[in-house]
Image 1: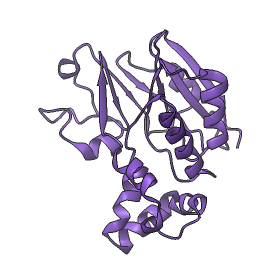
Image 2: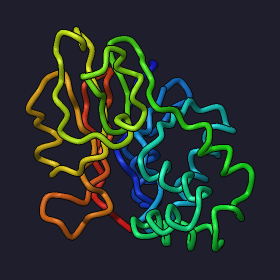
Image 3: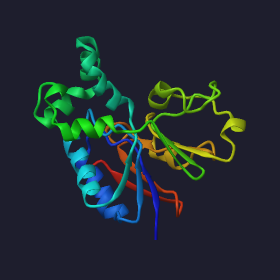
Image 4: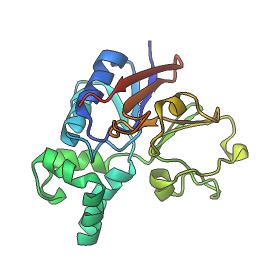
Length: 221
């Protein structure tokens, strides 16, 4: 049976990601997995997270990867020292350490290719997958790429959205709030996996859209 599953922000929590994928989801080649973005930064092993995704893809699993603001911060470091300092301030130092490098310029081509190929959004049926959200002030909802990675608390225009549903992450919430959303057309899957010391946070969340089933793993780094 084909399942469509979305996974929230991972932030280098490789053990938690591994447990979610293989113990809870028990990923199958028939599944389509949407990773919402922010694979890197802050957590202990960003490289390990990417390695899992790359290995699954090589073995024929369908893993769709969105671009989060942290991936964009990393990619922007080529613009100069100010951009690099901004990324390092936001957890990039942990990512460099996990790769064993001192600059993104030293990253191997396979990893650079992974990050460059991440997508701003995906559509599948009535579902729109995006890291942060959409700018409903634009006529074309998919025009504002910055909003797709960075927007918070944006107003949703129900007329423009129609019968579609937005699946996103980016803004950490308690697990309770994630599992009980205020709206029925917007679902935030970020339960702050890397923030295990915050009350109600510290969970990596997946939602099986096919069966309407939650799968949750507490941070086990």
